[in-house]
Amino acid sequence: MKRAVSIVTAIAGVLPLAGCFSSSPPEQTGIRIGDETLKQFKAGVTTEDWLVAIIGPPTSQSELKTIPNTKVFRYSMGESAGGLGALFSGEASKNTAVVYFIITDGIVTRFWADRATEKDLFGQEQQKPSGEKSGGGAGGG
Image (cartoon, rainbow, N blue to C red; front, side, top):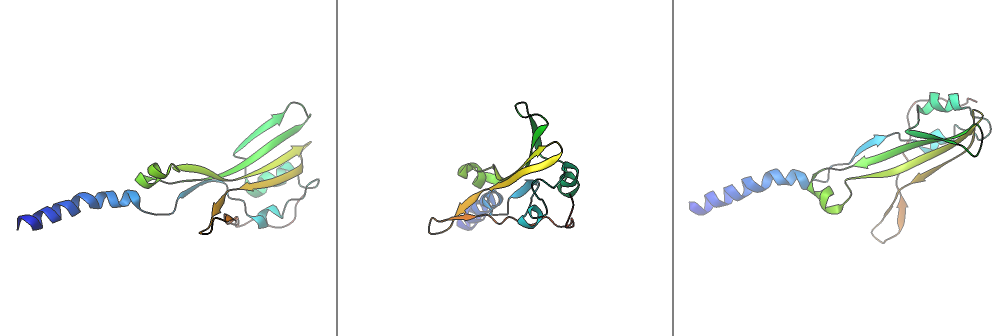
């Protein structure tokens, strides 16, 4: 009987920790911009107003002092994980994608996306799925 009580007590003590090691999907923050959404923009044609109307205000922006009337819009997406699993892996939060837009005189002149990569079972880098932002129509300028 004493042994049964010890086993039940041990299980009861470990169960609350199980949630800390769970592999629940990480929480996403920021703006996710998929490839289909990026295809809606054309360098030299798309306006800053159209860009913001489609995907919203940037996560951050800065002005270039060396190039007049030029600014950089950054749209970041990150993932954060909780629990002891994240603590031990050292990956509590990380940026998974940043999309950059260079805007001069109110016109998008260049843009690109930097996305995180993961390694598969064979050590080959695999780009994370880009996802697609729903909504928004084609065209614009």
